[in-house]
Length: 403
Image 1: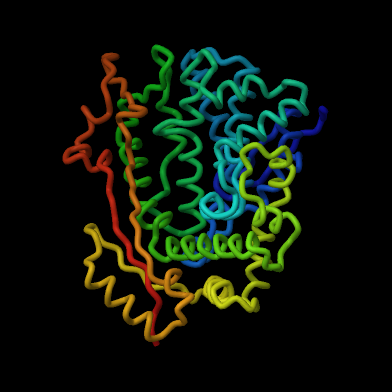
Image 2: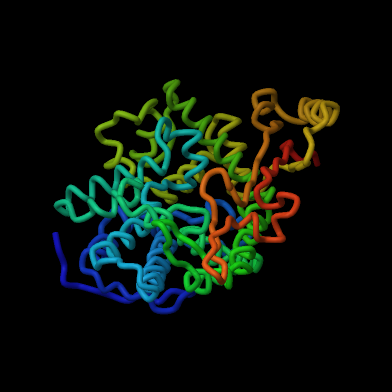
């Protein structure tokens, strides 16, 4: 399956993105990748940031574009990267999110059980490799970190990889949260390879510091914004309840593929998982919720209306566990104002965490002017007090607004 076609995409972040590889062109045109046009990059964040309606299709293209810039930068510094390796790197990052479903994280906790999007991405890549007669083998090896040149996997998945570079800048653009507007091009100009590991020139230290700060702030301000968090939790509970009803034999409205996912209990060994999953996108979930708002089941109807009309729960977030008397107060108010069947869906608590930098996992290394290689945390003043490497935990309590 080959093509002589190439094309250009006009991207609002980077301008024109050239697709000069027939193989990459065919992968973009494939239904597996085209499905990502119908998968939101930021789930329900548009309930907070109205502009956040971009897709995982755009993110895949943007990350691939940055990978091309990274390859060019490394080649200029004398790092040998063959044509085949360069193409494989682009393919690996292009397809890295291909396993995401609609509202991915909520789905993984509700109806697509036993598999996560990382596993599915690899399954999709392997299926495409079969279809394209082994042309994706090198890309898969890089993606799995089994290729001999380890720095290539770091470009795909590391502390400062092109995936994060694109989604921080792209999500910042579409949300208007300027804290995430990093200088990806400068960071890529500062990278090199020493002893098969990515290293950043000391001149790029402050750009790296800003990258880590942007990641920390974007998580608290955007990705873990309290309203986005409530919306995702409500969606998760809506899908879980719909699944419970469906398994119990209650007939629900929905597309055939969504109903199949609601009724099936385990997808790990399913022979039709990829085929079914490729038919599932945001449209299936949203259209079902529009129908479920009229369902006779009180819980399903209430939760669906809450999501559709943005009548979300209130939320308390704290650096410390929520006090028991506060929880008791909310539960008492609930009993006086809502039917009993809704109680466990409307008052609940949990925790969220954020860690901008995980030095135990993948250390960022800086090359000083005289060639000495040091760890970022030993050079950056911003690491005083473990601001970035500290695991920040917040506790939340969700409850309904009582009119």
